Image 1 (cartoon, rainbow, N blue to C red):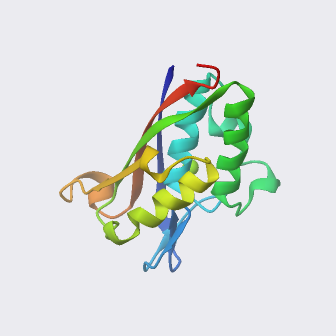
Image 2 (cartoon, protein in one colour):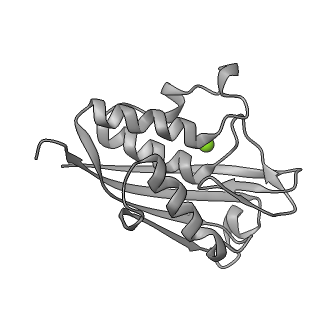
Image 3 (tube, rainbow, N blue to C red):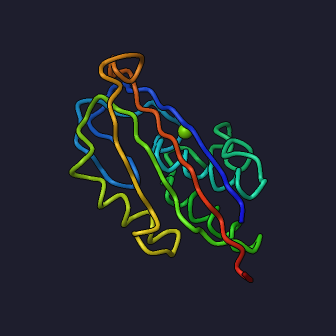
Length: 159
Ligand code: MG
């Protein structure tokens, strides 16, 4: 087995909605990002790449590359899922944490689990997503952006 962890942050800017875990969430701001800014999927990608010993998201999908402007992060996750099976691993489980003061995440967590599990070709029960505030402390507490943490366990396909 192999273990991986990931962390990502995106700042809020002008806009009218967020994409998190592949789900559109109505909001009075948007993420400032080269891609769609899906900070949850980016943290998950970094955890998977970390577990595989394959570096990080910036190495594989550089934000200087015009191909990734406004890209759907679930497409990047799909590419990483292919790398995972090529390396001989499948997902055991993923535990994800969204750190956000706003918007409220609870109504969207099940939809995020479903989207991610479809891309990773696993049961939605293998994906856990939690959301927490920071009691108004720090940059997330001031509603300047959102941070996400991801931990994954990878299982060898031949075990
Ligand atoms: Mg990112």
